[in-house]
Amino acid sequence: MKKDVMRRAIGGIDPRLVESADAEPVKAPRKSLGFKRVAVIALAVVLTVCGLLMLNANVRAAVLGFVLNWEDEENVRIHWNVESEEGEPADAVDIHDVAFGYLPEGYVAHDIPGDPDLEGYDPRIRTVRIMPAEYEGMTEGELSSVPDQIIVYISRAGDIDWGYGNGSYDLTYMSKINGMDAFMVHQIYEYEGESYEVGDIMFSDDKITVNIGGIWEPGFDETIKIAEGMTW
Image (cartoon, rainbow, N blue to C red; front, side, top):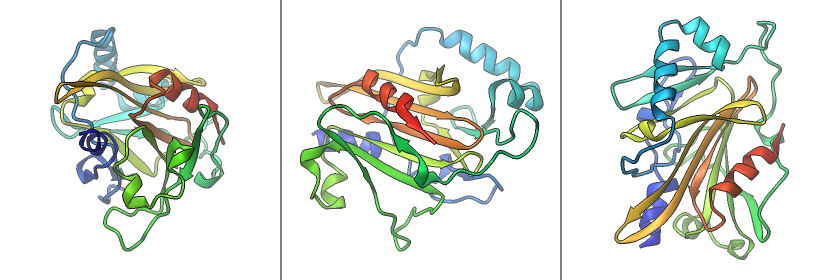
């Protein structure tokens, strides 16, 4: 049962919601969250602000650091601004230099090796699995369906336009991670009579974009701590 929930939360590939910065479509991994529609505090304020800023792309990028590109009423891509405050291109940062300063006790960060022969492989994305240390030694096939883990996708800002779809964007609210704009989703997901805490955070500066989330025992507060402890 939990394997099905984990697949919904972290195991999907949806090429509609990931797009290269130069508009050449690529397939890349994303978390497929089967969200139910729930009330989110301040949702109306967020959508109103986003709607007003959508009127002017330059203002939107300068004020918020990102641009929302709507495909239709439900699917939206988020393009992060990659210019510094002075208007110059941001200095490059290698995605493999991104470090985790905090992990819950008993958990480890495990880089998922990319395989160019697999569908959905994209060398611009670093994928990290945060899981209990006892899972170390399992194969990737085994790890893909075990519960109690979250997945972190790391890319250069502007290289990948990550997106929300299937009605999940209306559950998203704005926040900050270490001063960076952040999109957050936090809810209790009901599945076959059981409740699971689902959390997802997408944040970026002008160098690195991070998409982190899933279903795991430590909970959403620990996910936030991990995000706040990441450095580059």
